[in-house]
Image (tube, rainbow, N blue to C red):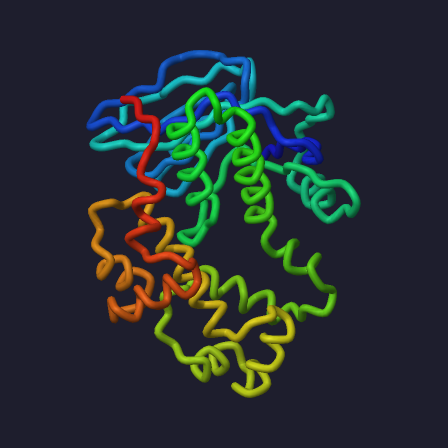
Length: 291
């Protein structure tokens, strides 16, 4: 796995962004461009090759394409395909490519912020990258040519979030040396199992803790209760669905994230986000589109 590393003390330079939707048989054009391109697939499978590396990207997966490296579709898509894309440059001259071991060491190195981006990967359902991508698209659409600087900062935020998510466990351990490995495991499990119906007692039993002890240690390590931590993951997934799945009703979204009561889901969303779920969906409804 290749990783791109670059200085993050300055924002990247945003060039363009959009969202492609194709009903069937999409084949990516053969080309080599002068900028980096990040593609995140929302639906279907994108078959693409960059240099000697081939990818079959499904929903939630992404690829980073490098400047001046020829990339092209290897076979037409079957059925509907949709993905977000953005082009950008790094203003820093110290960008480099490294392997995973080097990338992990650089992430933990203090005193110098960096973008550390894998060539490909899979985003979790509660990934903030999804929301940040939609917000970038919305910003580019709403402000047009006036948005270059704002989009550059939005693009930079997206790439930094991608960096943090790719090194989630490293990030936890970096935040505090006092986080026990068991708590890091539990936090990671809650990230992946946000829709679990297990009670706190059930989670404690699963991980071999007494409920009272687990509640105390978890709050000390994370700053919140297990219930609150899980609710935050659920709301993050709901935000992704609100911006990417316009046909889903609020009740369906609530059920998908493990909250069967629609009214409770709506109250919880407003408590965490400060606006209603409907208002959030409407706030990020505009995207540059191409077919």
